[in-house]
Length: 126
Image (cartoon, rainbow, N blue to C red; front, side, top):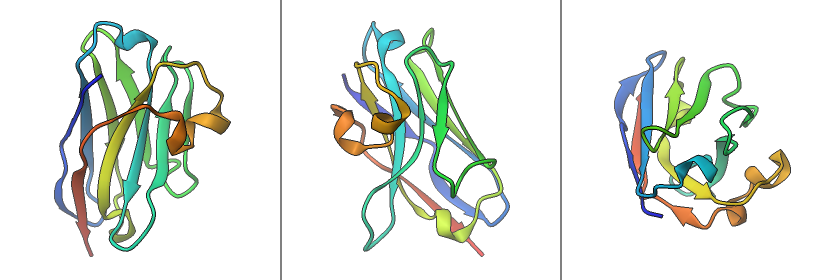
C-alpha cells in the first residue's frame, strides 16, 4: 500500500489545519490508520489512530480534544483535523496503515504499521 500525505503548512497558533492521507489500495476498508509526528531532534511519537471500521479512535493526551482522526473508505483517505494548534505541534506528520485488527495498545506503536507515507510538515508560529 502506498500512502501519500498532504495538507501541511505554516500556520499561526490557534489556527486549524487538516491533513489527508491517500491510500493506493482497493481494500482500504480493512486498514487501520495511524498518524505520528516527529519534531527536529526528537523521536517520532504517536498522535492519533482510527480502526479499520472507523468506529474507534485513539489520541495522544497532548492532542486529545484538539485533533480528530477519521477515515473514508469510499475515498481511500484518512484525515487528521487539527484545531487549536500550538507551537509544540510543529513537526513532520506521517500517516501509516496496518491491515491487522489491533487494540489501542498496538495502534499507538510504530512497529504495528507496515505501510508509511512520506511526512508532511506542519509549522505553528507563536
